[in-house]
Length: 155
Image 1 (spheres, helix red, strand yellow):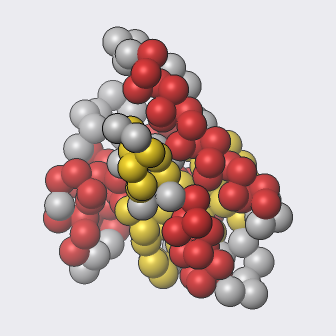
Image 2: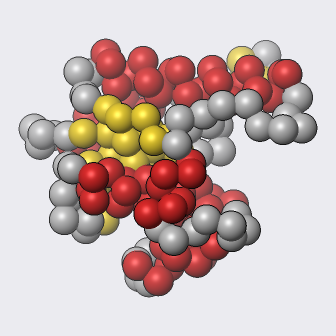
């Protein structure tokens, strides 16, 4: 089993077989902590546990970094979300690989394209996956799919 993870409060997790067959996805669940949204780690762990069962699993987690023009507060929130997911993988003893956006986008043939190109590519690969029709949530699932496929092709 392979997990592709687009971290962040608006990200997603996709589970697929080593052969690239879609199994399940989870748009990143969040909880309110004061005025801020945070990744709901308990819900992420429950999804992973229920989805992978006893399968040998490797996760591919998008490596996050500061983006030009992103504010300090939003960057902290984004990094915190990625850290929660990474901690869950470590706590569940799931081996993982950090993947740069440039690496998975290059493998998907998306270098130099706009953000929605990943969703278009995922729709080509998984035309029956209706979540991909939604612009926001579908984008996160598309990114996670392509991250997982990158991992499947590297394994």
